[in-house]
Length: 274
DNA sequence: AGATGCACCTGTATGC
DNA sequence: TGCATACAGGTGCATC
Image (cartoon, rainbow, N blue to C red; front, top):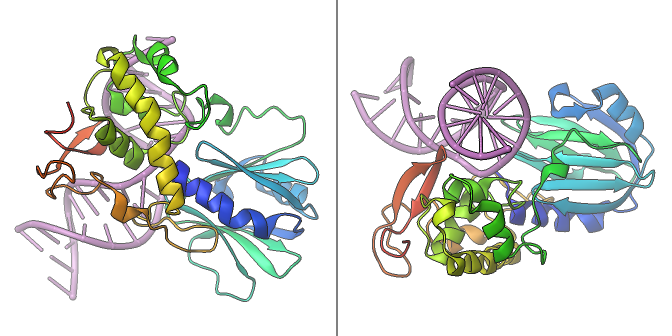
């Protein structure tokens, strides 16, 4: 579900409410969501610790604790982290509850149970979560046209598949790849080896702009996504191609088409994207 | 090494 | 209404 703008919105909504707050107790009701270490140790290590900072890298959340241990989370398709008063009804599919000293609970809810949590202790090497295999952040200077060209010009995959690869660039998913390729005027099935220098430049410039716009709108709530307070984002109405099959292209009026590329639904304008 | 396809899950929309 | 099928913001692993 959540891509970079949605995870960033969760981060921003939770950070001020969570920092310096102490965890009294952790309850895990679906142990499968704890990927490392085992659920018992996970709970034992977190009990009594305080949240010190909340960071985002790609689609991962990093909750840094006062012990310098880090709780890492990936929401995958339907995961949510929502802070709510302990007296509020616990939603269905809540798999982990962090009871805070201030009377609130941080709840991890995930209908499809693809989301995962990891606890990495201070000094421990994180070879578990995948966080260390990510490509550059789209907002970092190292994400530029030269980087994209050198990384991808020898590869045989479609540009759509390449941009979905988190080792190429961190944080893009199905929505923002389609939106970025539309904005750059590039057809999603094009092979990366055939993308021109000008096109790489357009992509490197446009991707951070598309993501920043969505962050301003607090993310896209296509279906399940909510921020750290359970609120929907407002970016859905801003999408130009994603989920707009049969509707007019906002640039040229042609009907938006839908196809499948890299096993994912793919939306594009047949006239604007070459 | 790089490419591909499927497995992991539940809920919802669609069609017969 | 009931049932079958397809599909959904993602990733990891087996296989070729």
